[in-house]
Amino acid sequence: MSTIKKGLFLVGDIAVFYISLAAMILARYHNLATFKGSFDAHLGPFSAILIIWALAFYWNNLYQYRTFGNRSWLIKALSRAIAIATAGSIIAFYLFPRFFELTPRANLFIFAAIFLLLAYLWREFALLFSSSGKLNVILVGTSPLTEEAAHYLKQNKDADYNLVRWLNDTTDGELNELQKLVRSSGTQLVVMQQNLAHNFSALRSLYKLLPLEVSVVRFSDFYETLFEKEPLRELEENWFIENISTRRPAYDTIKRSVDIFIAVITGLLFLIPGICIALLIKLTSKGPIIYKQERTGKNGKKFIIYKFRTMKTDAKGPAWTEENDSRITKVGAVLRFTHLDELPQLINILKNDISLVGPRPESSELSAQYERFPYYEIRHVVKPGLTGWAQVRYKPSASLEEAYEKLCYDVYYIKNRSVFLDFVIFLRTIKYLFTSYAKQ
Image (tube, rainbow, N blue to C red; front, side):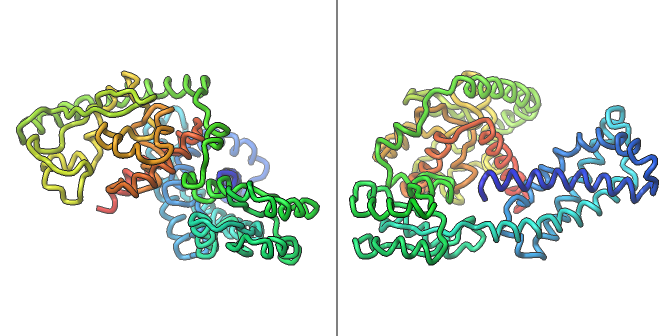
């Protein structure tokens, strides 16, 4: 789902939230004369817990309308999200009674029931609206990535686009029929493969589409929107010159401030657990408590990253960690599962080696292998991170092919990095941690 649509769903949920609050007050007190006073009394406390409800919906995938067609799933997800949000609201009310000045009695449960009904109806309406708002698209190109996009659109009926046709024959005969095809199908969008920009016949056919008010976009832009990664195999150096910004002073200042704040707060919160972890490592296996490894950072600069040691010191093996890896200690397995082995990297954040969010820094050994990838050096124009877009969108890499796939996500992040995208990655990381624990 596009960022705009996700934003619209969130705005819709906020509207439903306050409509449900008004409906709850009317159902509870049956008095229009005192409605305004009651609504004002509840407005502040309920506005404060709105973030809890939004997060509960996000963590239950309720901003992905691809699953809305399954009504059974939708009802279960809504019920689960509202139960979590209600419990969180009750805890907030009791922990901060002076701020909220409300107690979670019948009002909150009446509100939750009304919200469940209205949120379900809102999503049913949004599904109909989204389905009717699809753009008819024609893909023009012969590359494997164009085929990937065409296959995806055919298989995913929930996508924002309706594939009219994939023109994988770019001869003059096929292209000459493009104008007629656009007219007959009501196509609003034509996607052009990169190399056709140098094909005079193709450009002439696309030029004829202008009077039909059809948008013609480059395949790289369409692919990015569709998959939220970059089609590196089809890009040339000029794309990077046009799209990659290496300096964003305001964003970098905000990001550094947030990094320091969160690193200090998290370090203080986990100081005692960190000491306990250090003692467990020392008592259960031979070797240092902290594992140090050289990594590649911004502009190719080398630095030492810190982690709690999770492997036996005399173990040898591949650079990638394997499933059921015998090199991992028993304490290390727990630390890796809970991601607590990453805690010492708060020091790296404070030292400005890494940020909270960015492409994960690779070891010097792996980085040397990955340099064979075209444009790999681009991931070093920004500071690496503790978590990143590739980490929340793709599985851990265990081969060169998978590492290249993650590079496509890293370049997407570098191109689109912003405070908002960093916040989304932070939320997805938290969601991943909770859901990975729940699956065990």
